Length: 266
Image 1 (cartoon, one colour):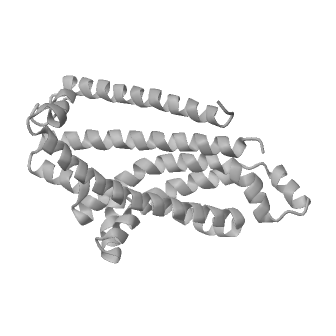
Image 2 (spheres, rainbow, N blue to C red):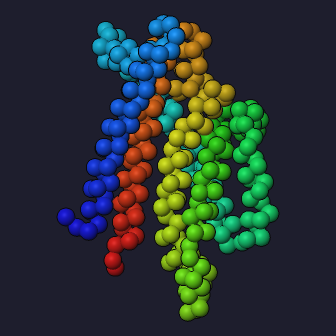
Image 3 (cartoon, rainbow, N blue to C red):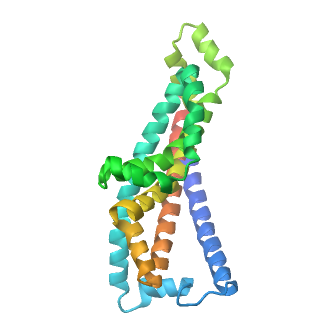
């Protein structure tokens, strides 16, 4: 096994363990909540109820197919916000890195905008960008961009100044110093931003589906709550949660591969 493969294998094994632990923890908390909460079993569904809905009932195949179709729609909507949000965050963080003046002018305003509840801004974004792909992407990106930006900016700012100054002293440009020194330091925090964006982009997709498109799991869950289809509602939440955990762990494995590649001797 090569030096490059070892961290990736270790990360994959750790991912399997943490994913299994996360599932067990969710099941334990869920079961405990159902046991302690004074909620009707008609509303609150247990893990066994969800399992029966998805796998044991006579219509389980149809149930899975319906949730899977909506999950694909939500995943696509989340991907729009995820990609757009990370691209914007990376672009702005680079702009701030190369210009302290621009950072001091705009960073406080950007941070303050994040404090505004998205549920109040989303209808305005829908009016501006419509209910299609662009509107969905903008709503998702609006939730993703600020946390990702702050994390990415912290990464590039954590570079030791002495290393950057040494590159410049030997005739290197500011861009060369960024590419050879700052970017490798920033990669772990940029992947941390991507991991956070995985879940926040799903929240953005659900919000867009609730307020704008009425499609995907977001739209279906809203209809389920109104129509008292609580078994399907809980099953949708479980499927969405498991999907988020899996994608989060996939990003972690990719991070290990990229980090090992960048740190490998050349």
